[in-house]
Length: 328
Image (cartoon, rainbow, N blue to C red; front, side, top):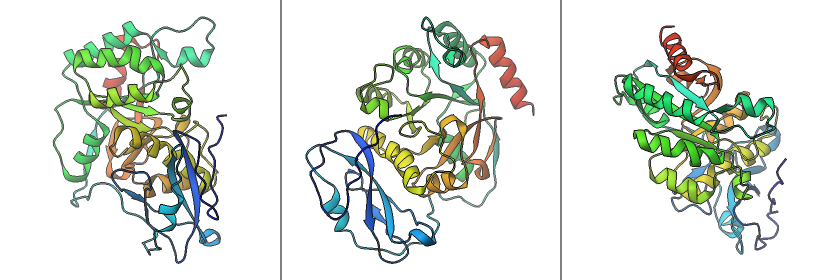
C-alpha cells in the first residue's frame, strides 16, 4: 500500500511540504453542499460532492499539494453555494437515444515477461510482437482507433464515428506503455487511452511511466484517464476515501497535462453505487469495467464493457473476439 498524503486540518494553514501528491482537504460547509473551484487548477474547474444526511457538515475537496504552499487560504475564501444533490456532468444530450457496437480493447503490460514473473504478471502481458501484429491487423482490416471522448460525443449528440471504430486502452501506466506500446501506436498513427495509477508515478517507481512521459504521450494524442491513486478495491469505502483515490488521481493528471481527465477505469473492474456516484459528481464522462462486451449506450457510460486481450490471443484470437463481440 502506498503512503497516504497528508490531510490538512482547516484550523490552520501550514505550508505543505509534500510535493506532487494528491490529497483531500476537509472544509466545514454551511447549507447542503458547497461548490468550490480547484485551488491549484489553471482552468478553474470545480467539483461538488454532497455528503449524506449524517455528513452535511463536511465537504471533501481534492487538491494537489505543492511544496512550499498551502491551498487552504483559497479554499476558505470560497463561500458556500447551494447546488442540486446530483451534479450534471458531461456533454448535454440532444434527446436522441443511441446505441453503438464499438470494441474497447483492454491491455496491461506490453513487452517481455521478466524472469521469475508470477502467473498474474504473465496473464497481463502481451508480447511486443503480438501487439505489433494486432495493430497491423486492425489497420489492414479497416479499423480506425478513436478515443473514449469520441464515443461519448457520438452517443450524446451524434458526432460521427469511422465505419469501423475501435478503442485501445492500456491500464495502470506501466513503463512498457511508453517504452514498447507507444512507439508502435505512433508507427501506425493510432490513438489510445492510458489509465494511470498515480501514486507510483509520484513516487518515481521505475516500473511505471514518469510525468514527463505522460506529457509526451498526451501531446502525441494519447488520451489520459484515471485509474485511482493506489489501485485498491473501491467497494464499500467512505466518500472521503473515494474522493482521495478517484478525484486525487484525476487532479494529479490534470495538473500535468493541463486538460480535463474525463474517464476512469475502476481498479480491478470493481465498483458499487457510491463509487459511481463519486465518479459522476467529479466531472467524469464515463468509466470502464473489465466486463466483456462492445455494445454501448448513454445508459452504460459508467459501466463501459471491454474486450480483454490475453497473451495467447495473437492476431487470430483478437480477430475471433472482435467478430464474436460485434455479432452479438
